[in-house]
Image (cartoon, rainbow, N blue to C red):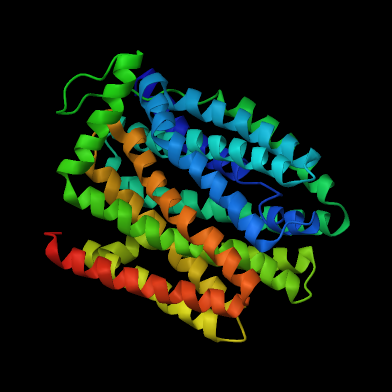
Length: 398
């Protein structure tokens, strides 16, 4: 095995460690509760999350192009630096303006890391001639991600019960570690596939990178469908994940109790994520795209209508993780390497568009009426969009 191949093998193993610590955000199950503690209404929290996604929408594709043109490794390291800036801002935040800057830097961190990590893993496997293993690897990585979430929710919830800032400072220390660890990755070679040579590292090449990536999506209807459909469902699941924290807080739970429920959801999601590649062999792609989102929508209705919301929150977490792993594999199979991070960023951009629409609306509805009405409305809209996407799926040659 040549030296570069050894580096690619190490990338896969190192990515598990990196993913664990990158997702060990003790603030993950606290920031919405903390904002409410600081006097923010659900409407204001919804607007702040909307600002996160407006920033993400504006910067997602440019940051994806940075990963394609200048390297996945550099993009990841820059993302970690933005994450450190965001948590330090959160520590000193006390009003809407401060939280706004926290959201902007969090979005930049998310943008720089969202496409680059996935692209680094896929292209490392591609160099090794093992790209068909991506779904299995992605499932294991999602399990690691969820295990990290379990630890973050439990530890963050425990620390947050006593002092929010203690949890945030520990998060900052972990981020500093990941900045150093990100430097250990080896940049995978990127071939030009059949699309010609890669754009040069210039402003003109940067613009061409974005234009060519968009052209790939426009010419491949299946890629466009997968991006829009799956990101819509994932956005609805994410909305439920975050607002359930405030719902449970309003029900009288403390931060640690909420952390335990979030951790159970992550455990269930992590276990099921490792089985997606086996389910794929049983159901095949088209049935996966029909049944997983349907199960998520049914669970949304159950959560909205049942007084016992925790079991259905866990089910939604499971179906979300499974759909994420499966859709990532389906999309990566269809796109050229030199546009991979940029196109994955288009996928994240679609997620942001949906979140901009639903997250502030949910917060406003919960403030004006109740969480119950907001959850029912979310399930109803999700059902309509699922039906529309099934109609589109029937028109496509899958």
